[in-house]
Image (cartoon, rainbow, N blue to C red):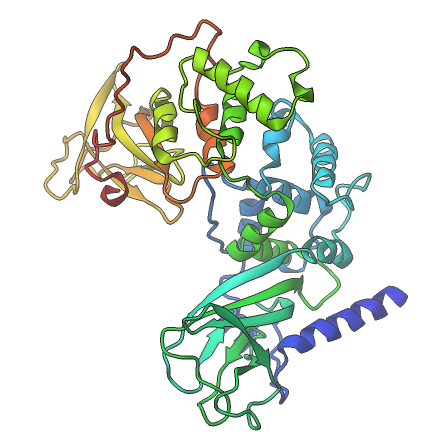
Length: 484
């Protein structure tokens, strides 16, 4: 009873942050207008995957079940499900011993909970994996996660409204910032703008009929209109749904929210900026050159370790660190010189003989070049030709298209036997290409996976014959980013 009273008190306090002045009619979610209008796509998710990040299979499975099985909307989420999804979001598989596929659910849960404990989430250690995830446990994880959401730009018109798209989740500690040209400034929330002056930075928070929070501005008489073109962002925390049971659907929707996903990573496992020191350390470990460092080097200062690592890498043909400081940021050109020596060759799939097949490359976030696609239909691989369009391709033209999805993953598309040939059923499809650099900024996450594809070299590694001339990434695409 005490537990229920506590939850009711917490929900009432945090829900008040976004409640309108006049209570709006709340529609239930049992097949009425709100269910049809707002929850029709519950469980349908589109994840923003980071560089080289695999699909979050546990999350995709939960979303699929939520979408296809009505009972999932009322089924409790287990601790195992939540921990599996969370571990993938935080990329903890990089720290797992061996391959996780060889572990049963209980063994995987024990390891993942210990790794989460090292990130500051220690509430799941020594708990039962198949027991229900409690509201308190979910709230404990989310309480440290502050979401920052860009709402858009002011049109300069009166009575503008911006949707936080919180999908019925209770949010709290809401702060609203507006940048009218002098940087983001905090605006004050009011229950009503009736007594607000037209030049005062104030706004209202209200809920629509489906409990999605909305930010409303004034008309320069009652409440100020943000100047036209002003950037608007909200900062807040998630609590969850307004019930004690945490369902599979709630977890699927909450953890597939890209704003929540990104914020969880930033809080519990932030990516380090790619400095020369960080990159040198990664290269030493990935190329298995630690044995060339003197015994006891761990006791030296960071600067001394960097100098030793620089000498070892230079002896092994990597001279981009000579004369630099450990705090210097790695440039795209320097990264490209390393990645040039690591061409990627991978079988990206097997043809099922159907029309319009597509296969994904593992290049997320990276510009690629020097791309070649091969199909083995007769016991040997033959190279197919890239085209900008299959419109003029015939049924036997060995052509393909290259496209990018929303996460910068490159996909290879084949034809339909009328425009472009369909690879024969069970034919392996192989890709060869080089990675150039991430589309966005350089962090450790950007290159850990890419460097992991390099075959570890032995100590007798021979560097390229000098002078080394790194070609511009024009082989395959004139402008890699725009051509995809």
